Amino acid sequence: MVRHRRSKGGYMARVEPTILVVDDARVNRTLVKKLLQGYGYRFVEAENGVQALEQVREHRIDLIILDLMMPVMDGFEVLARLKADPFLSPIPVIVYSSLENIESIQQALVMGSYDYFIKSLPEREAKILLPLKVKNAIQAKLLLDEVSEKKALLERELEAASKYQRFLLPKDVQTVGMLVETFFHPYSKVGGDFFDFIPLTGEKTACIIADVSGHGVLSAMVATILKPLFSQYIRETESPRSTLERLNEAFLQLTTEGDYITAFVAVYDPIRQLLCYANAGHPPPLYFCRQEQTITPLSATGTFLGIFDTPELGLEEEVIQVASADRLLLVTDGVIEATSTTGIPLGVEGLQELFAGVIGVDLGQARDRLWQHLQRFTRHRFSDDVSFITIEFQAMNRSRVVQIANDPALVLPLVDEILSALEDRCQAEAREAIRISLVEMIMNAIEHGNLDIGYARKSLAMEAGTFDDLLAERRQREPYASRKVTVTYSIDTEKAVFIIRDEGKGFDWQDIPDPRDADHRLMAHGRGILIARSCMDECTYNSQGNEVRIVKYFSQKRQAKREGESNASHQ
Image (cartoon, rainbow, N blue to C red; front, side, top):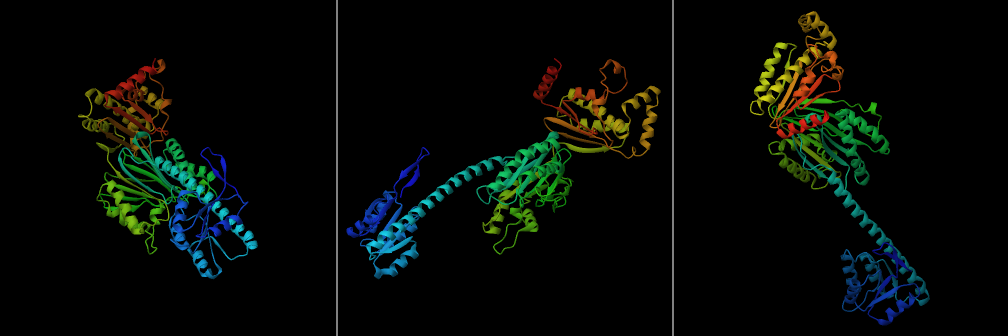
């Protein structure tokens, strides 16, 4: 028999199996070798157990033929020491003894020997039986070696995959308006849990926590695909529901029958302090309201991804108003389904109790204590991946949301109030630019948005001298009369962000004639957007056209960069 062993170069080298023959009688060792001549084996000998163990450590032994009755150290002791050593225990051992010691052979088999034969066996029978037993034992050893090698290779690959997966999961999460701590503990080397945070426009942040059914390599591969898909879809839509629907379309092509994904997606707007979310069959996150001292599950709004067509998902977006110091706990089902030693699952109510117990400590300690509680509850025995995220919402500096009616007389007092919050943040020139822009944008929201007076209609009314009458009439008539203008602003040390939103049907601001054109240069109105774009560093509308976001940076570097970009665009 010839075996093959892989060399460092990758090719398979021919290697003769090595057999260790252990017997205190030379004649018996010679007889065993004679019976096995011609089969391509190499032989190593030992006359007692001590020598046998030395030979095993000096040579690569593929099989041991072991006499049970020997001086110094008998075969039973050798067998016991071999099986107690994890590196030597895989070596198959064929024991042999006299017919009178059949009980000893039975004991050796119980101790883990592979096979046996009787010394007194006639030579004619021994020539048939012993080579066959040896061949079977060595083949079993070679198969075990191959399996062990493949297992070791798989372990190395899984270890590399585990490092890659952990690399993909965010650790030090930096967001606007949120403190975040994360935790991930896979059931095996890799797992099907996934979470991520993506910055969006207007200081908003999107987050996802998802769980692919099952655990292991396949689940981890699907979870890995989630990262680029989520990043793309949420940036394009900024909608939790639309993102989940598009993920469902993708996973319908990827998952096999019986596989599914649960996912919770949220978008946090720190300026308005609004959390918009949608849930596709995922365990409900727990929301802690500090003012009311309550913990509320944010219930699921749809079913799993990757099973049903999108119209059947039943997804709905929910929006909640949060406040500074409120908290959110997001988990995967490995937490909810964690069971005690008596088989009782933790469940949502149990998780609420754990969450309530860590509200009084900072987020890092809360994360660590939650994990410690889970370990104690399960006695360190988990049946699934475990992931959770703790979030604390923070108010941005000097943030406020104000609503006013469609009364132009209310605009200047509101703008003056905002400017008072800017006195120690920026120079007078910047404050004046903000004042002019705010007045123009709020008046636009009243006239063109809520009162639905278009550019052409305003032009005709102004030419006829009836514009004030038109304003008064619209302010008294529904649906215009009850509409409000919402001004949201946030001021920190680097910038001021303003969002002006009306309740009108919206418009395409690019349809407004350019007042710089010769045909419109003498018009008495229509310059508001141009003024805001000139005075502010950023001026953008939403797709509907009923919300404008304007930004003024206080940093000299940011202003210089903007001026450089503006100059370059006009060259």
